[in-house]
Amino acid sequence: MSEFTRDLVLISASLLTLAAVARSFARSLRRDSRQHYGLGSGSVFDAFTARYGSWFFGLVVVLAFADHLLRKSDFNTEVQDAAGALFLVFCALLIWTDRRLANHFDHYQVEAPALMTVGPYAWLRHPRYACWIGLLVTLTVALGSGLGFLAALAFLPLVIRRVRLEERFLLDLYGDRYTDYTLQTDRLIPGLW
Image 1 (cartoon, rainbow, N blue to C red):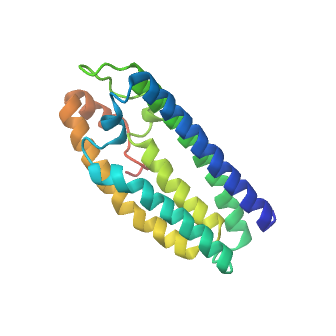
Image 2 (cartoon, rainbow, N blue to C red):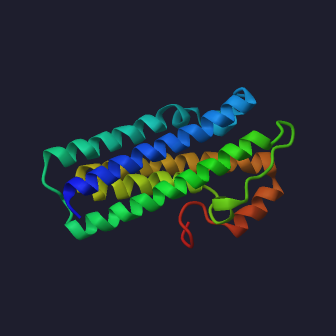
């Protein structure tokens, strides 16, 4: 695949994914009048990541695109094409995850929220965060940006911190139901963690 075609596919997929995710959550927020925004955004248990995580994510993407435009690729074409294909898979997984989340926040009651265990949550406890990592890593490699790839790896501690805080919060909220769920699922990487 030519570099121009790959870039066009990556940019188009990024924009379509962003639009789909924004649409899911805009619909959910409209329906519940922002009642569950604090929980859904994670600001209830992790105000730092809720406030700055998206900015960091965006900076990594901008850095990767800038590095791509200014320098020769740090990866060979076959690796870039494979990463581009995986990027599209992560785009689809993120859309699926966010649609499930938006529907979940549409339907649960504040007094007795349901534990999300369907869709991608049947396999991973944090599929959205897994998608964030997958998107950054595959995008930076598909763009041939070694600098972007290193910045994507710097995003990992932020996500791991978020996962640990969220798990503590969910354990307090759901107790034994969450403990049982953790025995059936992995956190971010199937079969590993």
